[in-house]
Length: 65
Image 1: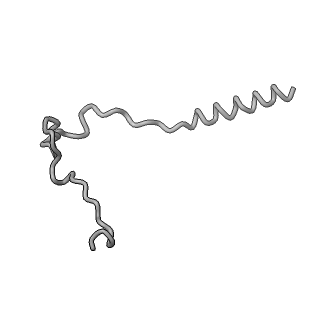
Image 2 (image 1 turned 30 degrees about the horizontal axis):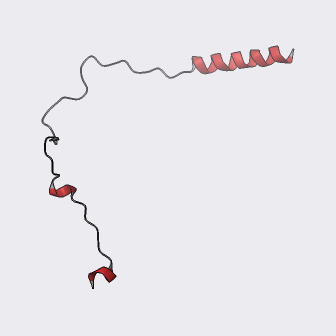
Image 3 (image 1 turned 90 degrees about the horizontal axis):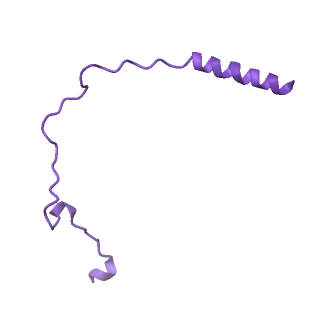
């Protein structure tokens, strides 16, 4: 009997939450964003990296002396 009561409680709870599910907005007909100019471009043909990608390691005080 307690199993049936538990199953009934689960069913009531599930249907209650399903009935209160939020309604999603409709999908717009047109695009939201418009493609314009590129902000940056990647060039994977170069073998060397640009100066901005150089690895700089700060030397400690003992190495500078």
